[in-house]
Length: 150
Image (cartoon, rainbow, N blue to C red; front, top):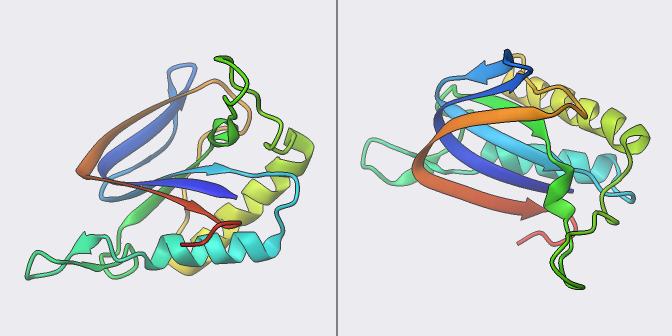
C-alpha cells in the first residue's frame, strides 16, 4: 500500500462538480492498494498516518499528530501511485489492484482511520473521475509504503 500524505489547511474532492468530501485543518491522504496488500498493511498505514508528528507544537516544532491537533482526514483512492514508467513514457498500472480487490480494502482503510481518529473520514467516490482541491500547509508532503517502511 502506498499513501501520499499532505498536511492541509483545507481540502475537498468533487465528482461532476459535486463535493463528495471536504475537510479544514488536517491531512489529505491519497491511497493506492496493490494486489498483495493485507489487513496488516492497512493497520500499519492507518497507524502511521494518524500518528505522524507533522504538525507544529507551541514551539513551532513538528511534534504533534493529526490526533493531537484534532484535525481531520480526507481519504481519496489513487491507483496511479503505483504507476511504473520504466519502459517508456506511458505509465503502466500493473501493481495496482483491480477495483474488486482494492475497493473493499480502501473502505476498510477508511473505517480504520475513522476508528483511530474518533470521527468520520470523508472520501471521494471510488473509481470516479475526481477533482481534488487543496491548500498544502507547509508545504508538507510525505509518501509511505507498507512494503518499504522507512
